[in-house]
Image 1 (cartoon, rainbow, N blue to C red):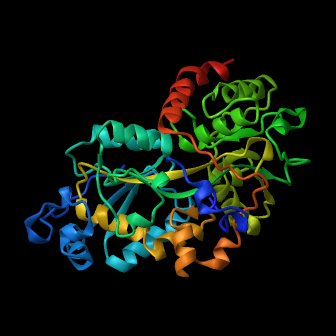
Image 2: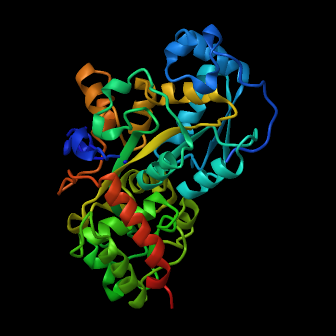
Image 3: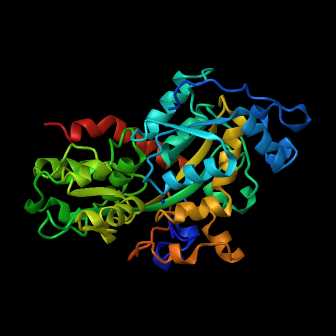
Length: 387
């Protein structure tokens, strides 16, 4: 694939999957206890579909459980609404999506605080910094989906603890009917025209989207993958200029006009442009060349998933051609973009709609760089935007 949440043919046929690759809360409900996989192996310890005796065995075990608990999956994020609906229709398994507007940190908190409870999340979808953290904490179960070997090595944990699912670029979304001239670069965001308009999708200490925005801002202001501090300082300047908007972006805040400028993933901003077209909102999207940054999100299974077979079936579905093309239909570049293109299973029409990228992002943060950046943001973000 070409670049990342990504696109050589992905981002409007401008990038390749390899370029976008990154090293990379359920509510209560009664259900059948997780049974054994085929051959008497417990579903919680299954590391591949072979442990269920094949896909039919996995489907049967998942249907016996009858439920899947997911968390923080907004329906309009990377086409998750359709993905969840299609999974339910295909397998007859109910999906409970808790806290759809939550953050990656909320997901981790739910996994740790609900250990042993039926309300615990079965699966998580995490920003890379948070996926790495969850793996280090021993919260994730090793599981290799059927097409695991087709996922590039740089996009997965070798043991199958986590793997990239979809990616995109950091972008600037703008309501052209409320903003006289939409910003195209990070430097533009400091202009006096944008008083109280510049918002993020969450808090960068908790949310992967906002964390990505700070990394992108760092790259546009003399920082590097080893130094995210200039990005924090930049948003401090945006605040000092009176341009920072503390309202966290959601589709509702955009529709109400509360967040006329949003720094967010390209697939979200592109989706909003389509979503709000019929409501009279002219939502324009730009991928800033002065701060080109791409990232994948990561799929993982809770080690203590209350519905372990359903969790594994969900992963198999997301990494099937249907699931990967589902992400693509939401303007996100799927992890198997290149493999599917070679196999002729990629939705070419959906790929052609991906945003154009002027300056591809090809070198992704290492685990150590990501850990260091997250630590710096955690320590310094609040101070930078205080006052």
